[in-house]
Length: 168
Image: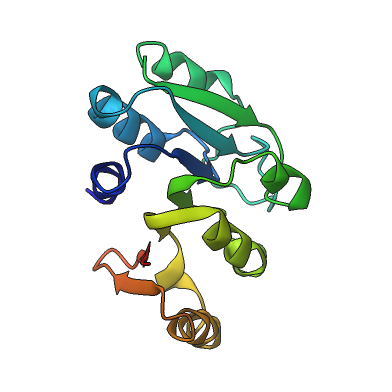
């Protein structure tokens, strides 16, 4: 719904997802909203490697994502095979209307969140997937950052995701 909100409130703009793995959210968004956009770039940042060394079920093959996007016509995918860093973020356009942050790394997400906010258009949406799993100190730090910016509106969902809407 928040991706659709971003489209309804912005006639043009691009999408960004960081931390793709199998691309479940990406696939849902693009299959449900493909007929509501036109020539919309979708930037996808992930190195497709299990960087934390855990035994989690993380996708290591970008083709597992690409094969399920063949029928998508109006989103134009830009795969950036890298972790979230300055170099990868520099490849993303400045007219974002929707971002999905799912790296699971608080330090990296918090470091680059101001730049992502700056790249986001008014009425754009940023979803932070792992918000509710951060420590209380980390949550307080990001809450304080958001509350100091009068142009940001925050909603925390029962799923423990944080939704940020950028206002005028």
